[in-house]
Image (cartoon, rainbow over all chains, first blue to last red; front, side, top):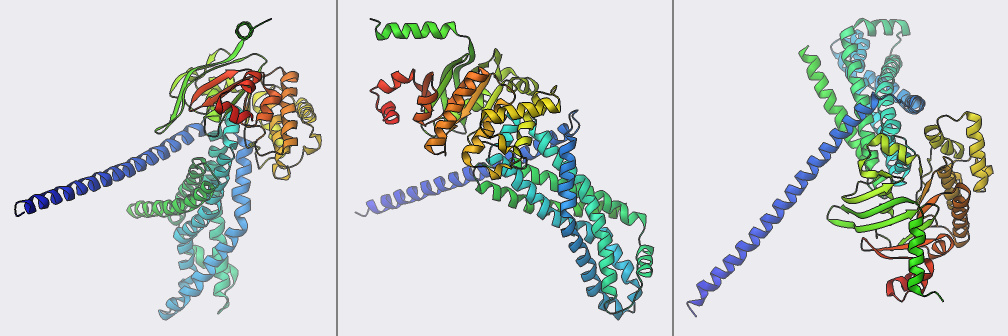
Length: 281
Length: 259
């Protein structure tokens, strides 16, 4: 009986060791699969971007569809961007005024608001709003086209869906989002003028003259350049998520949702990179 | 008196005398670890309606998607109108697809376009030499053929399931294809509309002299349209023959379909 106790303990330890080994192996396999999936997704995304770039410079450009997308992205987003722009300027002015007043720097208000709007707030907030509206719209539309076999039907009709659906949308977003951003900036300054007039009396021309006296070309240029990147990122992410949606209606929601989440995140990442580059120049 | 083996011989001779428009040999395709088609060989002859039967998930839709190059297969060969599908690059595949009409299970009408724009879409890309007037006439003709002349300016969302299938069929035949591939043409339709679609399939075959593969698990549709039937089971051809042979079969699986 005394001899059998160590034997039982040994067997128990062996059993435990085996269980641990199995658990570790299973976890290793799961993690390896996850890493593999991530790398596959990354490679898919890179290939998608390369294919989009290649199709952009192909001979048969779908100009009519491109114009339709410009209308959809540009004109149909105007009301939302107008309200956003006005509120940005108005809120920024109302919030900044007390701090500036403490230092007796009220006169700096138009310039400060204009610089904040043009360099940072206008592009980033407008791009985030666009990632929500345009990115999710693209993700949902292409996702639903995928689920209902419309993309395959296009392919069978001897039409290149990448050229017809993706290139036109990405180019339209790249072109229209910077225009929307400039429009939001202009409305933001108008909103700021309205905010300044809540507790004061500043003429429109004086406010604008003061605002633009603080803005140089160097404030405009990086903001405009990064706006094109914001547009391209929003268009690419929206199309990629929609075009690669899974089967079933659930995947349409997932595509729209992830287009917004990833699009917004990438807008912020692009912004950080752009700010760093501008700072170095 | 002709016995069964003699009928089989006559059938074989008749088949061989016809021109093959599609020839599939030992087709294999897997998705991940799941083998969907393990070894499928079949032929489609000029002017015939070949019905492919099988349970859901037996790989019927995958089979016709491989024929038009929508899916890349792992092994075997598909020859369509003398062209080996796996050898074709994008341009070649595009040219081949101009000769093939594909009716999708869901209809796949473009939601953002009217019926007229849906029909113009393939016409503008496949029949580039047509004038606007010729295109309008062609669209009018196919809409009359499917009995929906008044739906010209409607959006797909304004159409019923049966109407969507008809418009989808009109969009497919508007470019005069040589081969028609029907993916579950009657699924989700009531029996009356299903019969109407089956009749339309026969009319299309007669009028446009098409050769067709009809994927279905609707036995009434098979009865109305089939010249020859193939049943797929577990990724392989389970049985091939005439509709009569299927109906007479004592096999349990076949009987479960034809009861």
